[in-house]
Length: 410
Ligand SMILES: Cc1cc2nc3c(=O)[nH]c(=O)nc-3n(C[C@H](O)[C@H](O)[C@H](O)COP(=O)(O)OP(=O)(O)OC[C@H]3O[C@@H](n4cnc5c(N)ncnc54)[C@H](O)[C@@H]3O)c2cc1C
Image (tube, rainbow, N blue to C red; front, side, top):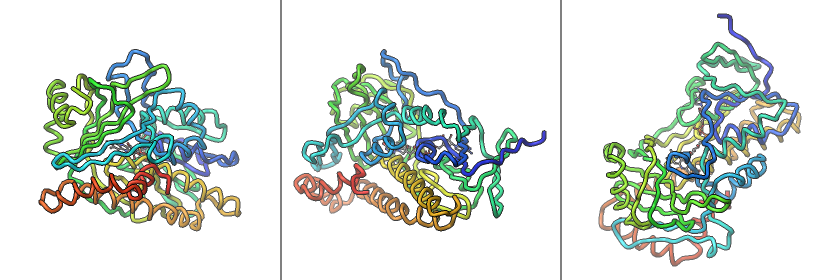
């Protein structure tokens, strides 16, 4: 069959996840011809008033204040606000083996909230709602990219169903296993976290009271993220969990019956929210830290998980990706205003300089946390407990850590 060629794009964004769609939404120049391509066409999770574990998207993100502002500028926040979300006002972090604990509270930090927990599909849906109205933008889905050919003036992409798409700039926002990154031979540094993460929605005996919980165990961290409050739906007894553990233990937990899993989770959380009484289907994610050596190459730029993937223990992956999205769009816009071409190397260079050091810093911090809490030697255990309790007493350090996590200093 003869391929259909669509060659009239300035920018093709591969990946309609949170990052790709935010880039598309922030690109306000109506003169730019934009295509968004995604291999999946998953329908959004429906809004229903009868809540059961299967009515939630198991994938949620703790979004920072900075991400919230970016989504406002992308025109999506107004739509998200009419759906389900939870502004969390406190966070309790504690160490399984000792007495160390830290409590962060919005009140103490003089901020309205520490962050917002949102089901990923609601963010994606809100971004798409606006994008469907853009006359200069075409969405191709389900549509998987299988080959890439770089020319001097443009990049040619070919899809599984024989469509050829050509653009001056290709932005890879196609996630952790980015096909574009692979096809364009970007070099990537990878580290094994030696953790898999189990993700699920759970119902708890006691209300979460808008508090996020994180327990650090030697086997890995367990997080409870409070789900939707406000609006007419209040689900104080629903939380999303991310339980990271060494792969063989994670697989064992994953294969337990629902009752057994709820029991193990109640134990692991030290019943902070009472008994776990219901649990959705579980999802298992192998975790790897990856970082592309360069964020751009000729006419191709990487953003979000395609550029870097990070341990979810501090819930920063999407937050970093949204900062990439805004930085990339700002640099493109500044470049176009200065008369440059959309894939000008100066633009790509400025984008990489704006984001790489910040992303690397956050990745290093997460790696450090992971090692600190996995270490069982007496001295590290003592330092950890003393450290946590001291942080709790030191408002400057506590403030600094919280501001980093909330994206207030990025
Ligand atoms: C367990 C877990 C918990 C997390 N919790 C948080 C949190 O609390 N806060 C936070 O900030 N981050 C969190 N993260 C990280 C966050 O989920 C990711 O960083 C974020 O979703 C990345 O968004 P993205 O748009 O870059 O990639 P993705 O969301 O992976 O989107 C990539 C898109 O590309 C498409 N695609 C892939 N290949 C192709 C192809 N060949 N052709 C066309 N399309 C393609 C996919 O279908 C997908 O839609 C968590 C991650 C995990 C694993």
